Image 1: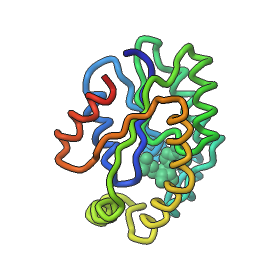
Image 2: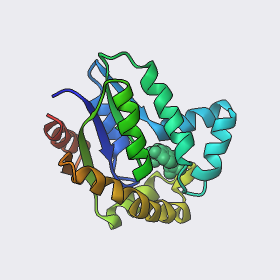
Image 3: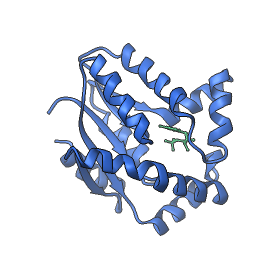
Image 4: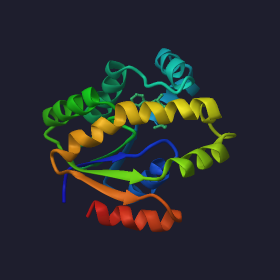
Length: 186
Ligand code: AMP
């Protein structure tokens, strides 16, 4: 199967870890908007500072800003390299923009994988990660979960109507989940 893959999951679902395993093989680009924003923040760019003003509160960075950074990355990617989107699109306008920018590059979304983890498990996992990421404090975590339900659930429905979604159980050890994911995109 050719085409691009979109990985969707709530904060703490392990989608970043799984994305890195999936793209371990050559011929894939792992495009994670959260990673791009954190890189900009580390480098102290204006975009990094702008993104952080939202990230630190558990809110989404505005669509135009997020879509621009993705569009640029897609343009730079050679046609032979497939793209795994991790943490993008997170809103319906982003999903619509993704369709358009991929079409302009002769690409399309081939499959959407939803990593499912019950909310009580998410809260527990994020509490453990709390030392690692600035946006993993209990208050910001609650906000991020709420924003996910409000803004990103509708993205799952958007792709479900097109029959592109496969759900994967995100519980269990990393290897188990990775093998379920490999099946879901094959
Ligand atoms: P992540 O590393 O994917 O959990 O993203 C961390 C934070 O970056 C999110 O809580 C948002 O503030 C911001 N972010 C990442 N991706 C997006 C996106 N597609 N749209 C808006 N904000 C995003």
